[in-house]
Length: 126
Image (tube, rainbow, N blue to C red; front, side):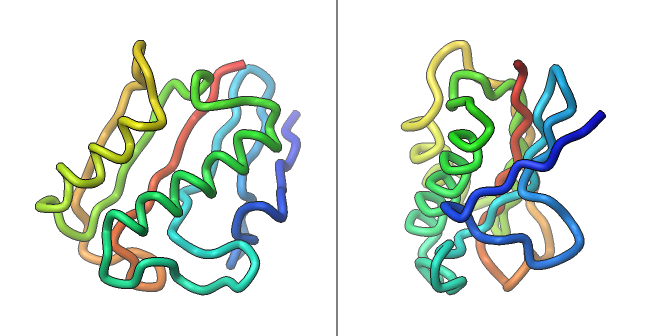
């Protein structure tokens, strides 16, 4: 059985998907991009650090709605427009996670939704 997790504190889905799905032992969270949850506008156009901070704020809101926090995250995937931005993104990411860190993959992609610079998805263990 699966249950949708939805909060107004993170951007509303812009397509046929959920912010997150509670699947019992795990919560699977869709990738978050740097959208302001109220205006729907991109935060930090051209600034990967500002975009990463907004992405992490959006993730925090989904975690809260799921009754979890960053300590429950077991896996993340970071999608970057430019792998050269990895050190900046990694530094901000590290402000939110503490040892033992979640497993992680980071990939450079040709394009992200709304032409943002970063998208991050997570999986939470209950």
